[in-house]
Length: 252
Image 1 (cartoon, rainbow, N blue to C red):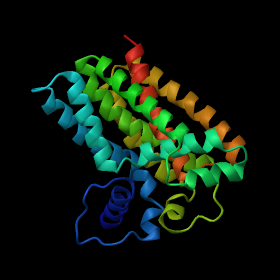
Image 2 (image 1 turned 30 degrees about the horizontal axis):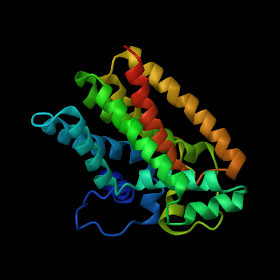
Image 3 (image 1 turned 180 degrees about the vertical axis):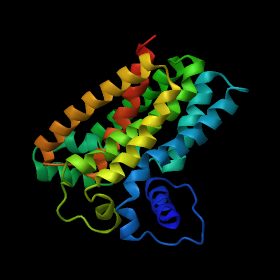
């Protein structure tokens, strides 16, 4: 059982990040990928912890804005900026597409358009501004918790919504299978546990705000696409992460 769970975790690590995995474990079997979603928030822990370490070390030498930029850059390096890319593709798709087919086609285009460029700049600027405005005692804790809880919200769509692309094949299609209740429960543990690092007066309102965003995003995706795509989940993760920082910042 330990070997199976390790394989699932490594599958999640390989799919959701660019963190090197042991060379002895080759490939990403569909069987492991179908259960990789349970470890998506744990990958968020790892990405958040490594980049938080960069911020912590940088604060010993540089001002907070420089340290936060270095941390953001590290996080994007660890994930290959896949979630930021997904957000930009979603902005282009929903901004430029009038029909379901147009929206899905635009999101598949590797080129970035005006909607994607402006949306991504606004997203990163808002994330940066919120982080440097947080109290130093809360910055690193909120950073790690935000990476974990945002990934939990994104992966939960695999339980409640339908994959919008009928032609999906390969690794993406394997991950997009409906997640089981047990996998979702494991993901919930990893996603919610970091919230204990924050005071309840900040953690609970932040969680409530993210649930409202999930409800609204779910309705919007159902109306526009009839479900979700990988780009949509990446966009949800980014929106949840930024909203989490903003909610923590807004509360005393």
